[in-house]
Image 1: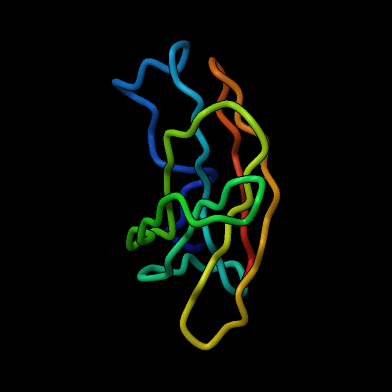
Image 2: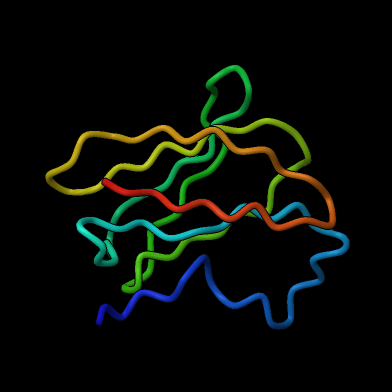
Length: 98
């Protein structure tokens, strides 16, 4: 059994009703990938933000509502682009396999 928690980090203490949250987990062969980087790109492909994944492969962004692309960069893997839609009051859960 792997140590990855399904989905992104715990939302305890996060006011989801007033936020547009994008979060998830990065895995390789079903195992979490720590020390990967997930970039948030706007609809034109411009870099907006970047976060490292936790030891359990998790990441989170607070984004504006709209269309985004997550670009995941992990050691010994090609980058993976994942389209995602953020909406205020919702959590967009993204699972990325590298």
